[in-house]
Image 1: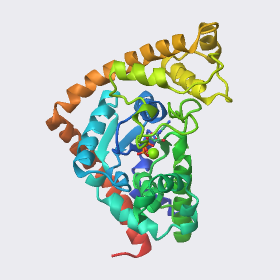
Image 2 (image 1 turned 60 degrees about the vertical axis):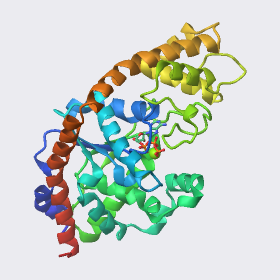
Image 3 (image 1 turned 90 degrees about the horizontal axis):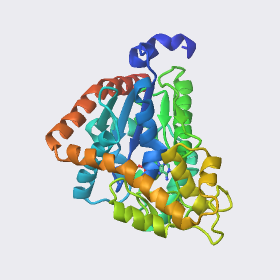
Image 4 (image 1 turned 135 degrees about the vertical axis):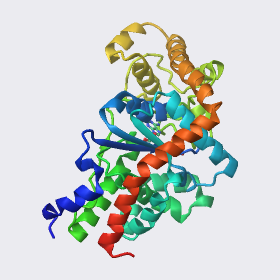
Length: 347
Ligand code: ATP
Ligand code: MG
């Protein structure tokens, strides 16, 4: 059977055939404190476009165990991340929010797709190299196969778009490669080929301490990131200490990544064009700019923190939202997995 003549099977497995809206899938690991990079590179974009798409947003706890993590912390981080998703504006009228391990199809499909992914492809993954270098004592097979699990997260839902930060570009590319290879091996369109959605601005917010590295939850230095739940005085301290340079010129300049990163954050929070920001701070020093940036950050995060406290203090409702999300997405995951097994000859 050719790919073209397999449209009928595709329609059966994929709800996308009847969808009016295109499907979006993305996720965040409950590995630590959610920071400004996660917000500006991912969550804020999800919120802004949520009414245009059929959205699935996952808390990827199976990914979180690829590096050592305390059990209690993992459980709590998962709930905290759900509360933050909601506090940032994700709306269950438009989005299904769920926890990856609540839908066991992710793990099952991941084993199967491991057997269809050449090791050579995984050897090229830069995130594995970075994380393995940073955690030499804890490199396990799960960390190596992380991109396959991520591919399965996306492919199970016949996803069209994957809105992520720039660091995840390579993982969406390998997802397409895995899907394409499987479809052509069996000459059936089992998987929709997803596309990464990566914005021009804010897709890689850099560490405040070392602007050659991206801001990360797993960075051992808390001063490297602004967490969404940081108090105003902590934000003030971190911005005051953020690395800049000795030129003391408030201007976007790729040669000066520290000040450029702070300006990018300011630009994303104010929506102002670069020239307007540079004009605003012409003749002023880094102190004035950092004070203005701190004020903007506090004003942006204060309402998120207020809503977060409401959600996290109503655990019954939060658990209910996560259960409902898993119940809603599971039928699509089951359908795709069953189709994959049938095509392979399993069962
Ligand atoms: P970890 O250090 O545990 O990998 P992380 O900060 O990289 O944590 P992830 O859970 O891996 O966060 O990624 C969640 C989402 O946030 C992804 O879409 C990722 O591309 C995006 N993201 C992560 N860091 C940044 C950043 N510094 N700038 C922009 N987007 C980011
Ligand atoms: Mg990451």
